[in-house]
Image 1: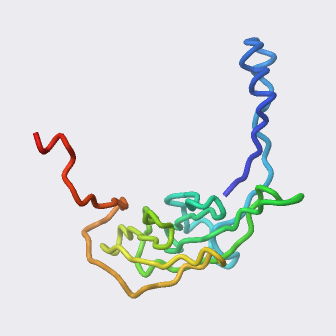
Image 2: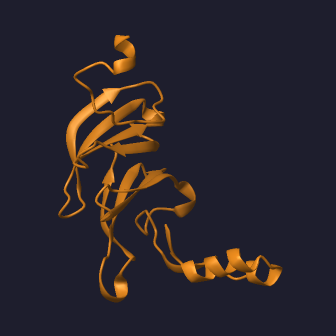
Length: 162
């Protein structure tokens, strides 16, 4: 995972100037690159499937296809480390090839879609530590590649009543 800093003032200059020289100015600056898998695991045997920011903005999560895990990074908020990431946890998905994952509306539950093991799994998310906790909830689904959290409504939408 790479963290970049966006320079808004340079971007505004690039837009305003509309010249080749201005367009060549860099609006992004690399601040950090962190691995999503343990150092001992061969990097050529892993690809990232999805990256997402927790609804709180305090964590970045990445699925690892090959390592079959979700890695959680804490986003630092203060001082010289603001915006940088540090490893919080890595959790096996109890399935193969986690293609997608999604938080529920509360941000307390994470569902993983394990494409090559034909299942989805449910984890509890600890907002204080960034740790994922396996709930022992696994559901057989043929080749899941996407999960979505939907809030049910108690009433039908107005259009369906007409």
